[in-house]
Length: 565
Ligand code: PEP
Ligand code: MG
Image 1: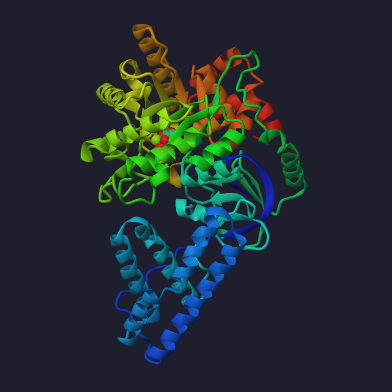
Image 2 (image 1 turned 60 degrees about the horizontal axis):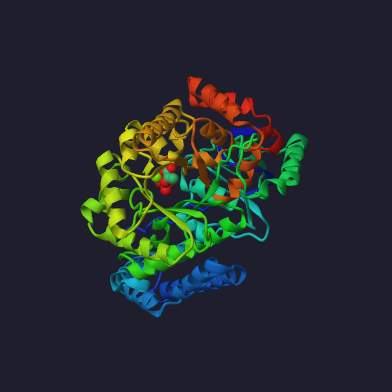
């Protein structure tokens, strides 16, 4: 038995065999020629055969998939047989280029052509590049890129996952995710939580475990155990027995003494919203609108936006839905708003700041939101991402007012906004703490980097102090203006049941998280009174470091261990 530590990001205790994510396919060297003993005819035949295999594989996978995944796979399968792609590759082979280099270059030109056509065609440009990589892998005799296929469920081990990898991630086949890279706020972590998969990131030494080895994963503790024994079997069984209790939320977030803490969902579109409503979410605390348009390279029309927003609002009639305006940039680039050449995108023109460089987009979005809100029964609140100053908050509020939006707010995710929360909140109706970015900026640690995972936790005393200061600022602004300015949390911190208790103790009024975490957070919240939560908040604030804060609070909440959280 051997223990490999890491950072737990999504709870669950499970035993299974591991499969490694293949390495990305490297580019064949520029100018690579046909081998002396290979004729162009032989190379062209090999290329066509490889393309045929890729086509058949993708078609087989499409037949087994469903929904969006099926459509993506079917479209990609067709591209492996694309006449223009193969014809231009064969032309290059006839001129003496190697088969791998030929398909690589042909793929690049077809992709560029599709990109220039715009609209639906442009969205297929990335699929051609995927097909090209698959054909090169086939020619080299190495595994195809992307999530491996398997007849039996497995634990996926990868360096990190790209958002695109998730299109074909089948939660029925993947038991857990373990990555050597990635931080607690990385895509892998967010995806794992939204799918309800046990997961850990920054796991040391997992690259060396052979494919097919049996391991135990504890996604709360952040532990992989090689060759698990009786103790791990028992823990995995106990988790499975508890799973039913942890998947049911009664739609009523409250402490043991009846202090109400509405538990809301983070969503990226109508599909998430419908699922969140079914899981009992009391509303939406963060609608990431950029997720509706990630692959678009032109600005969506007002009508298109309005329809996308209304579809989310309609899942929550009579309930609160907090929509966030486009947070383009850094880990979520939108081609029509993001300058891809910025040297330091996390500190660049992202979120609200894109209004400086691309004026008009924000106003049109607010107009579309107002239109959708008027046509729906949801109680729509609207907030801007990446607000740094009171002046920005004031301008955002006036843009909202001009569009007819009654409840403007801001995300507090830049330390300057937390430090000046009193004046920032004077101009708007509410704030939502984005602890993912607040942590990355407070600690100057890229949220996507595995080696910085220890810095990148919202348990850091500096982050807890910023949360506390934001609440103090909101109390000041409320007293001054005579209107209550609630502060919620919509970063991943809200999905950690122990930290959720601390946040409530610090005075946060709502918690928004991936819908899958609602039941676990509700279950733990119900075991403490508001006074207990305040006591735990004091304890966390008094800790010298993140590790101590987490350990001290967890030690006072034995229910966490009982439930495997
Ligand atoms: C955050 O930064 O905490 C947040 C909720 O926004 P995002 O993760 O989309 O940047
Ligand atoms: Mg953010």
